Length: 334
Figure 1: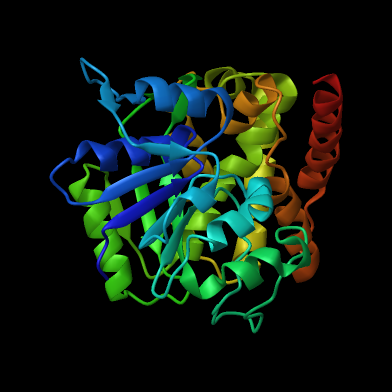
Figure 2: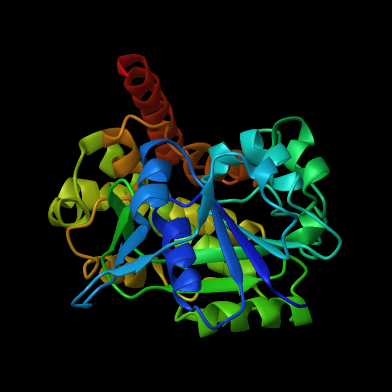
């Protein structure tokens, strides 16, 4: 796979981080562009994209092609989406317009992705689709799961002001084919991102990574939004910690029923979370910013897949009802 053009579709906290790192490699021969919108787009166009990396003395500042209309860009060798799950379907047509023969699409997503069951050899559910994740099969039809490279991000990042991103630590990204193949495309994409200074690993078991991260996301994201608490505050409250533990166990039980393998116990995952620090989860950031919350991939699918596998998820069901109402009130307030 030859990678000469890369479009970051959705250059928010994570997408913008990758765009800035790629564009900083002036001698890599890659033309980097971003699709963004609003004040963030205006700032990138006027002043470039600025990235404050953890422990770096000075920010990284890059100039790159930025637009809110994907039709103005040529077909790409690689597309990396930084959109959340509920933002993907409205962008499907724009992403599809950037495709050509051989284009691959790296999708950085939290929770259960729309392509999850594509070429899934476990459990006899290959190619199962969920309308909650992909209404009318729009993504499946216009982009195609066969183009997708899954990506799980372990990177705390926040847009602190338009055109400017702050990283809380040096994170890492895990890439994998839905089929489990260690393909030449996967290797080429990992190499390009590694050369840009990102910490990249590849895996034949991307679904295991999805479930491992979901243990934390399904608990901390909605609880932080409901309470407006940062991670350290949640970890310091025994009642909230008990709720987090129960959600993690439900996620693990559902994942187990679908054939996932977890590298950590619930207790080990909780202990790991104690070292994250006083960060705001992505859902809390969206709540404060008046944006729609990423509910279905993180919480809704735990409940839906629990029903599919006959695994009880009572705590997740309660949190789902509460956070849905929170989202409705937040959008009404905006």
